[in-house]
Picture 1: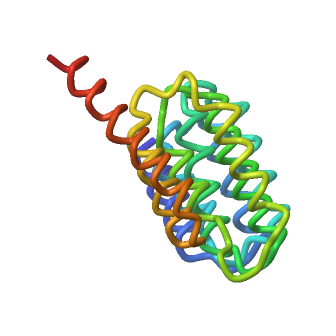
Picture 2: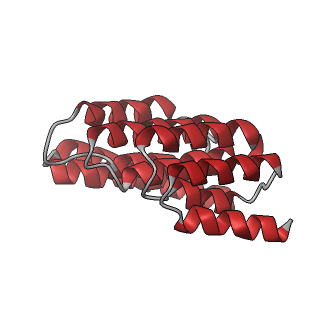
Length: 182
């Protein structure tokens, strides 16, 4: 089994053939290789198209139910790195949203989303990012990180009122989080 895994990892890392990657992926699933790190290599292979990355990610999410959060976060980060194309930006946002659904108490997907905010061009995703954060913030355990990131976002936008509001919410949340730890 170790040899098979190493062979598949080698193909995921080095192949520039979508067909070879597909065959290796099929083999990995057939042998139930459940090391997510191996699949991260596949998802980051630059030869894959947007649709191929999505296809592999969705299959992995179905196959490895207990790894849904990690797969969604990694897929979002792969798309985030390619965000100069609007379709990739939308896909990154989609997978960060999936990560929130899988682990609503985690602050990490929210911080990833905030990094997608485009300060140069007013894109539809900018409003969507802020709306998703607002709608899903309640169950997050460590809200202070999100509030401080939002404060910084509004500082960059020149909105002093919202910058101050989120900085104050961040301070309050941080105090509360520190008291919970004691």
